[in-house]
Image 1 (spheres, one colour):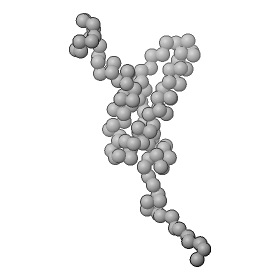
Image 2: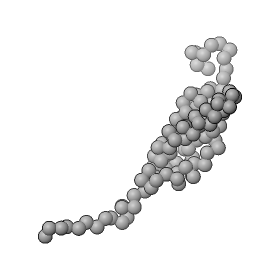
Image 3: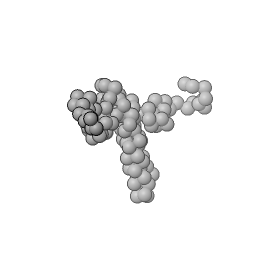
Length: 110
């Protein structure tokens, strides 16, 4: 174990790390679904939205008078990453329909 931890302290370091680095937790959970550069970019763009949803859930727990117990890694394990990707606008998914159907340009003023 790392020397910065007190002697006898033996946490599950991987879960500790992921809870301290929510972006790493999200991107590592999304990694199996990021089969193309566009999908990986799309998931990177979704982090803020997903993290805001998580904060809203633990905020609701706290407003209800309970101590929030939902961990971000548990929250991301229940996400449907394929649905997250499909719900993004086309330009965020990296799909550009102009690439296959270019705009026609008109020249005026002969």
